[in-house]
Structure formats: structure tokens, C-alpha cells
Image (cartoon, rainbow, N blue to C red; front, side, top):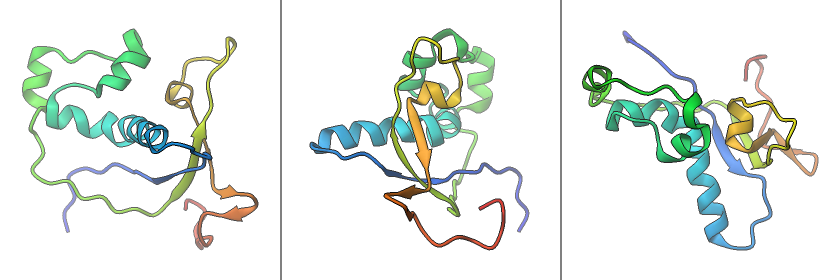
Length: 127
């Protein structure tokens, strides 16, 4: 099959101990925005997700009107093929944390919880 482009995504499970479903939902929505939404939201809506705009602020590039016209609605189909999963938990940056993709996300990623891996180890180094 001819593929004109591709993005790599991984599956995210909450690594938090959540007492209320609202906390989990809020975390999942932010995770979705920072991971998948960073790429897909602009090609569907012509702008980055609101959560990225609020957190990343002036470091997030702005689309010109011409770029919005080119990008918005430019996809006919999105297929996602998942190979990798991580647990994610809140990790708030401190005063010395440099701005970065993961510090903006306020997240830490781990592949095991309480010493138990999220799934079986694959036979390739990149998984």
C-alpha cells in the first residue's frame, strides 16, 4: 500500500491513582491533545488544541490564514496502528525545568507499574 505520510503514536494508560473519574478524564484529554491532537487537530480544525495554546503559549507556532487554508480539512482518512504503550502520570515542572514537549505535557512516561511491565516485551529494540 502506498503511504503518503505517517505519524507515530503510542497508547497511553493512566499510571495515577485516581479518586474521581473527572481527574482521569481531564488527564486523558490533555494526553490526547498533546500526543495525537498536536498533529491531527490542525489538519481537521486549522489550529492547535486549546490546551496546547494555553500551556505552550508563544512558543507554539501560529498558522497564517494561508496555512490554515492549506492544512484545514486536508485529510480524508486517519488510520492509527498502535505498537507501543506507556503508563503516564502527572509530573509538574519546577522552577528549573526547561520548556520542552514533555515538560509542557506535565507528564512522566513509564512502561511498568509496581515492577509489572505494561505488556510483553517485543523482539525489536524500537518497541
